[in-house]
Image 1: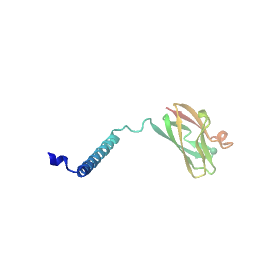
Image 2: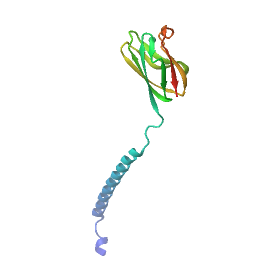
Image 3: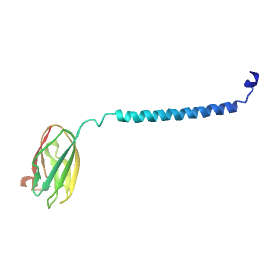
Length: 139
Ligand SMILES: [Cu+2]
C-alpha cells in the first residue's frame, strides 16, 4: 500500500496517455464507419433535373415543338448550320439558355423553369422571323 503511493507518477501518466490515444483511434475508426454507412442511406439529389436537346440549323430548330420537365434543365444546342445561333427563352425574361454557338459546335446551358408554355428563339437579327422559333412545353 505504502509502496504504491510512493511510486513516481510519471510512468503511470505516460501509460494513461497511451491508452487514451488508442481509444481515440478506435473512436475515429467508428466515426468513419458510421459516416460510410450514412452516405448510402442519404437520399439521391432532391428535385428532378431534366434535359432538353435542340438542333439548330440555318434557320430552324429541330424539333420545333419541345418538351421537358420543370426544375433544373440542362439544355444542349447542337448547331449544324453554317452560321451562329443561340437559344433564348422569351417568357423567362429573355433568358439566355444557351449563348452563341459557332457553326458545327455544341453549346450547353443550365436553366430553371417552372411548368408552363414558353417560346424559345434565336436572338441573331432576322433569325426568329426567318423561322428560328419553337414552343417549349414544361410539365
Ligand atoms: Cu440563329
